[in-house]
Image 1 (cartoon, one colour):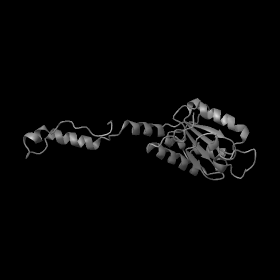
Image 2 (image 1 turned 180 degrees about the vertical axis):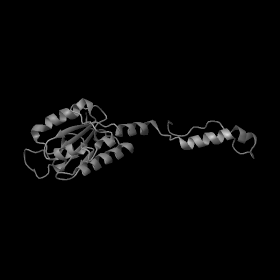
Image 3 (image 1 turned 60 degrees about the horizontal axis):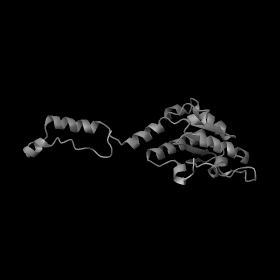
Image 4 (image 1 turned 30 degrees about the horizontal axis):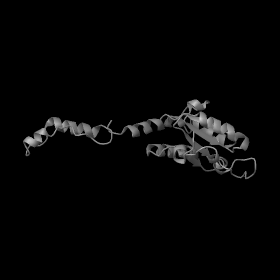
Length: 191
């Protein structure tokens, strides 16, 4: 694993003594090995490991929760992303999938669950109701969970299909691999 750049191993001594002579067999083998071995930075390796071992916590509140439950079935197989076990405890989860409408009465428990999660943590708002209140534009329904917690990915739909949720998960993985920090760090929300 490299820090940021390839290091010069000082293997150019023969070339300095004999400028017309090509690289030695040892130097050719080292060059071939450097081409064959994947080098990365520590940050990229950690981001890759985090995407392959996310543990989602469910916060299913309405009809979107049924679609969310189906992604662990054999048809969609969420295990191929390293996310086969949904956690019942927020202290064991690093991804919160909020699916369905959030009424004002559930805002405090949602924030409590979010605060109990260890960092780094990510949030997916699944469906129109979780993203913007959906068709429930009234005094009882929260008009988007981003008023309570920092949301990383919004998955549209009413309810969104399991494929849409998996697309949201893939987009979250892409953000993580690109080095984009979680939404709470960008927004400056105290966790």
